[in-house]
Image 1 (cartoon, protein in one colour):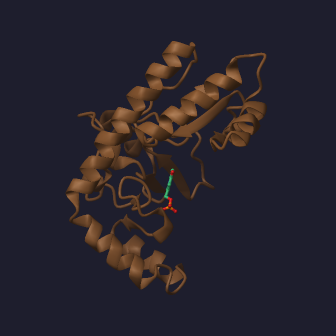
Image 2 (spheres, rainbow, N blue to C red):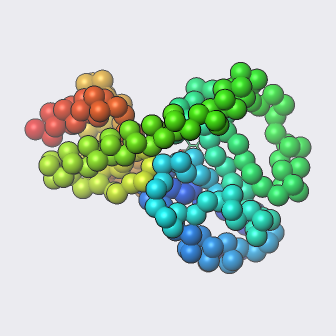
Length: 219
Ligand SMILES: *Cc1c(COP(=O)(O)O)cnc(C)c1O
C-alpha cells in the first residue's frame, strides 16, 4: 500500500483487525508503514474490532496519534460494546484534522440517546470483558467444528471467521442453503474472496445452530 501512494493519494484506509479476513497488522509493521506515508496523506486506521485483540504486539492506534499528525483512528460501539443499533462510534485525530471533519460532518449525526448509551457503556468494563471471553469461546467452538469438517478457515482475531467452501460446492449456493435454514452468513465475493463465506461469532447455542446447518449443507 505504501508503494501504491502517489501524488493523487489523499487518504489510505488500514483496517486492523481487517474485515472480512480477521487478520491483523503488528505494531512494527504499522509503524514502518506510517513512516513511509507522506505527511500530507491521511491514514484512517479503522479499529472496529480493537477490543477483541489479545496479542501483545497488536498496536493501539491512539498511542501513535502524537507521533503521526496525519493519523485518524476510528472505533465503534457496534461490536464489543453491543450497541450496533445505536449507530455510534468515535474518531481520534489531531485538532487540525478534527476541525476539518467537523466542518463537513452532517449536523445531529449521532442522536442524543446513542450518546447516553455510549457514554454509559464506556464504564461497563464487565460487559466488554464478557464480550471478549464469549467471543474467544465461540471462535474456538467454530475452529474445532471447521477442523472436524475439514474446512479451511482464516485464523481470526475479530468477532467473525472466514471459511472456505470446498469445491464442487459454490459459496453463493451454500449461502442460500444456509439462509433457507435460518442462518445468515456473509458472502465475501465483493472482496475478491468468491470461495469464502464469513460467519459472525454468536452464543454457544447460535454457533451450534450454524454448525448443524452447515454440516447438513455439506452432506
Ligand atoms: C462494523 C465496522 C465498522 C463500524 O461500523 P458502525 O457503522 O459503527 O456500525 C467500521 N469498520 C469496520 C471494518 C467494521 O467492520
